[in-house]
Amino acid sequence: MSRKLKKTNLFSKDVAPLMYAYGDSPQPLPETVQCVDELVTSYLTDICANAYRCAQTVHRTKIKVEDFKFVLRNDPVNLGRAEELIMMNKVIADARKQFDNSEGKSLKRVNKDEDLEDIPEEDGEDMGGMGPGSELAVEETSKRGRKPKKRKNAKGSV
Image (cartoon, rainbow, N blue to C red; front, side, top):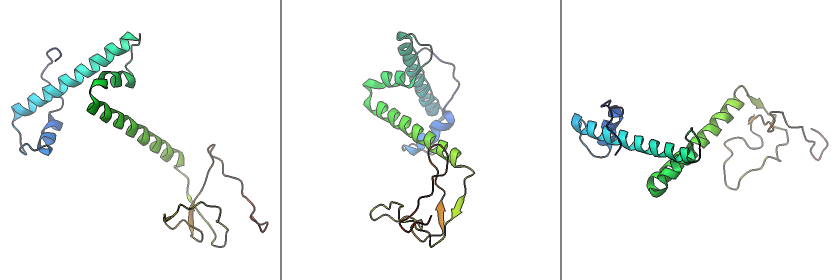
């Protein structure tokens, strides 16, 4: 364990419900909550200190995600969970980025007689009312944010 820390109870509000979720009483003893809180705090302090030492060996002052992965390399359960959280963080960041980019774009009305056969449809999947003949379709944009060029169909109309 690491050096003695001040008794700040950083995670006491979170520890009590977690203990209940894992089978403890609804109101665990304050001493038990304090003990678990100290264990969690010292574990996190040790992990962060080891990651900092790892960063120093490659002459960096900032800790990177790879440093935490290196520290957790001998603990496959925690390493797997850390990698899962990193992946989910990237997915959430990408979704947030797409949401921010698409903000302000509206749905556009599509005429029922317009030819929409060039829209790919997955096998057996329902398009959620967005197939040929539907009234609403999401406005498509290219990677640069421009609207795609209109294509002529076989009849020569747009």
